[in-house]
Length: 65
Image 1 (cartoon, rainbow, N blue to C red):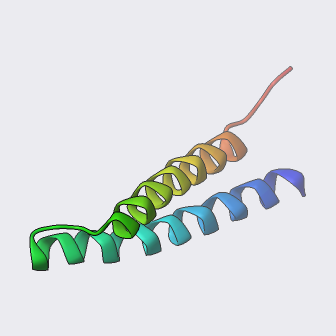
Image 2 (image 1 turned 90 degrees about the vertical axis):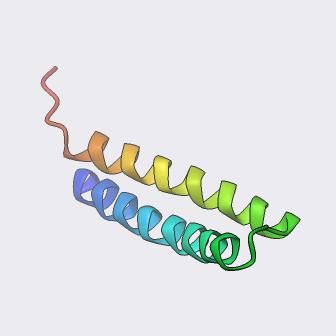
């Protein structure tokens, strides 16, 4: 149960993180520059995405103690 929850939360974190990153990159591509809040949201999204990938991989990896 704990392992499944970690995988699901990791996937949700990846999707939410990409939801922050993609609009900021679209603004950068369209306007050629990003505002300060867009930079902050892009960094927050990148951190969330990487943390979600790490949590999902950690939850999916089989551990033998």
